[in-house]
Image (cartoon, rainbow, N blue to C red):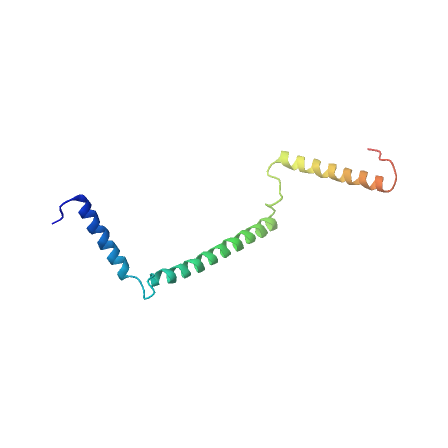
Length: 105
């Protein structure tokens, strides 16, 4: 019978050490760990690859449907139209300066 708590803990610890030593392979390491780690790496690599491919496909589909650059509200549509007009005006000013003319904006 176990007399103290420390003796009980020591016997539990010793039993666990013996059990883990029995499951080790001939090299002294757990032979199953490497096998399962290899499969885990392969599964993670494939899962990451599928996730990236699905993300790319989603972007392509969103562009086809018009969700990527489409305005989400009427105000946003007006702002985009205004921005586009200002951008074109800026290009026109740049071209006129390149040609040596003064801009009339």
